[in-house]
Image (cartoon, rainbow, N blue to C red; front, side, top):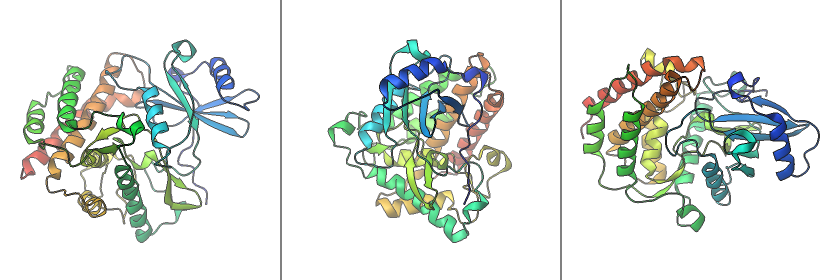
Length: 356
C-alpha cells in the first residue's frame, strides 16, 4: 500500500523560518541530532503552521503560530504542548513532546517540537489505495468516533488534566466568548448575524452533559491511520483548542466539518475530509452512534450543531480579517468572507428547522 496524503511541500515565502536558529535550538534541547537539517511545510496553514524537519532519517515536527495579530488566547503553542504532555500517559494516541521554546528571539514566537507519527492522514478524498469497500469505510468511521468517545472517557480529575480548563459553566463561557470574537472579527462585507447569536444565548442548555477532556477540532485530517492497518487510528493531532468542557460541544464542533453526500454544492466546496463517500455515516447517524457508545442523551443536539457551525464561522472570519488587514497574504483566504456569510445562512436554516 502506498498512500501519501500527508505529503509536505516547499515552505511558503511568508512562512519561512530561520533554519540556522532552529538548528541551534534543536541541537541544544534534543539529543543525537547531527548534520544540517532540511525543512518542508505540511499542507494547510489556515491556522497554526506545521513544519517537517529532517536530520537524516530522524524526523521532527515543529508547530508555531501564523504571523500577524491573533485573537486573544488563540494560537497558544506552549499551552498546546502542555495539554499533549498531560494527556500522553492516559491517552496514548498523542505524539510525544520533545522541546518547547518561549524565547521569541529564536523564531519571533513561541513554538514546540514533537515526534512525527508516521501514518496515513486523510484529507479531501479517500485514497483508492486503501482498498476500503462500504463496510470498511463504515468501520473506519466507527473507529473515528470511538477514538473521540475514548478521549471523553479519560479521567479528567487527574491533577495534570484538571488544570486544563474551568469546568462547569463551559457552555455559557463558549457562547459568550465566541460571540465576542465574532463581533471583533467583523469586516465591512460581513453580515452581523445577531439573530444567530441571540438564538444561541437563549437556547443554550442550563448545564453541561458532563465535564471531560475535549479536543475541540476533531476531524479526519487531525488523526493518523496505521499504514499496516488503516482501520486503526494510532494518533490524534492538533490539540490547540483542547480543554475541559461538554462532550456534545466537541461532537457538534466536529460535525461542522462533516459534509455528507446530499449536502448542497456550496457546502460541498467546504469539504476537507472524505465524509461523503459511501459507507460513511450521515451527521444524524454519527450523533446516534456517539450516543450509543457514550451513553449520553442527544435529544437537544440542535443547539450543539448550530453552535459548531457558528464557531467555524467565527474561525473563518478571524482568518479573513487577518487577510483583509494584510497580516497574511495566502490567496486561499480571499474567499473566506463569503464562506462566513454562507455559514451564517446555514445556521439560520438549522434554527428554522429546530424544535427547541
